[in-house]
Length: 262
Image (cartoon, rainbow, N blue to C red):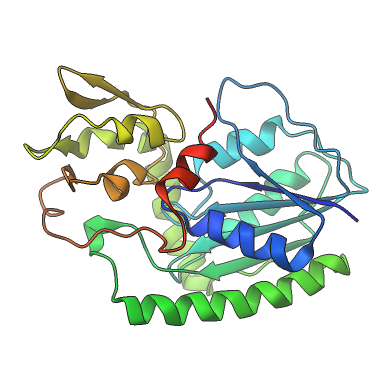
């Protein structure tokens, strides 16, 4: 049975996860999620996977918009992998509720613990620690593939109760302001106008003006622009200079650029 994996990625974690799952499943197509302004999505396959990063302990706006535009069929098997740095909170429950509102359901939801790319709270962890996470993730993906092939209905994974309550509160408070959080991005004098930030943004939120990136206030907070800047010129606020950038080591720039919907 063929599977469609829709994914959204900023620094490569979700793309790597989608690729690994596709390898285990076989007969699988990988499809980047489109964003606001595109038409309805009507998946043809019977197994539909949604793979995405957790942002501020909840669903990114792009994912919510995508699911709202996706045609659903209660007879199909919907599952999701939420990529996070160890705090999935109630993200998968939020997705399940969204699908239920469309008269369908999330048959299985899995938390994928991967290295964080949220540089304001710290730079990339050591490569040895990254590899430990990657190995554990790949083992889990193998188990997930077996469950997806069997079309098992299982409860979605979630964080502890305190996390779901507190972090979900912060998510609800932050959500209306996410698109304008790009006001904290800026480029220092190392910028050489290579335009990679403009090209790699999954929602085309960056334009180059007078040789510098200008953010257009429909940001998703994926940090692709900052993490993929070859000169490490792009900063966020006052404390990202000198912090080690993170990109998944098996994902290359050209892989990421190929994921951006033109």
